Length: 184
Image 1: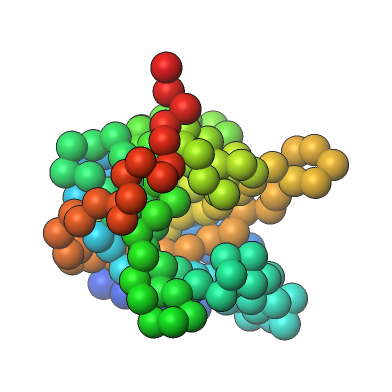
Image 2: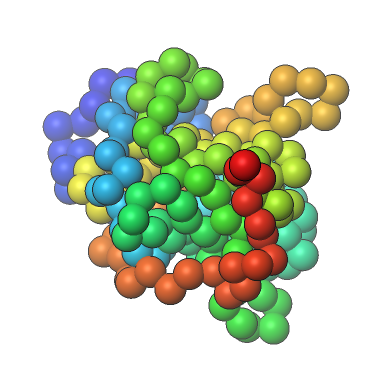
């Protein structure tokens, strides 16, 4: 897939409307944002795909999260850390599942990406070595793919998602002592 001429006009539904193989091909071509480009709380959009199989995969993520609906990601004003925002079944917004943020090399294709690594914190996504590789569609709109350790070895297939701004301000996780860092 070549980059569309009108990509600067794309909104989240346009990105999410792309078929999986073409979406992954698009992600491969996108540039990495700099860590300081993202600051604050961004809206998140899960990729539901175009088939019953992809929809059920998204639903399984919801079940693994105890019914909490993913609302988006947040990035510190001082680059280096972030967290997820979730809506609990009771209707409460929680801020948790911290990750480190660094510009690095994607393990998927060896190209630059903003790498969000959960293994640096003591949380459920870190226990399966979840990594999100983020790339810029346009200013304020980002396409990422998530992979984790697969049962039996290797990594899971990339699961795409979108985050979009303009962001709200950084709030911080609900309990900073809950997910302690694994860093020395």
